[in-house]
Length: 71
Image (cartoon, rainbow, N blue to C red; front, side):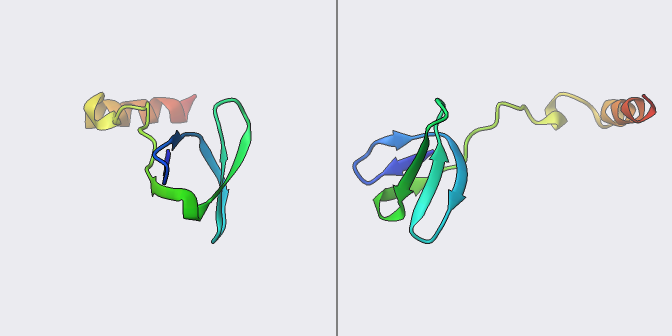
């Protein structure tokens, strides 16, 4: 997510960057080139994937890996 100097927010996938620009693909697939001068702040997206350490015990995770390795 990018916050611009004017306060607007842009979200998407970072597909490239240079010293002068950021290239972002938005949710509709449109590619945007944003001058770095107009960027106030960049933040990493929050992952929808929950931390596995909170779902499985170490033993359950080990058993899962062993199961997947045998199939």
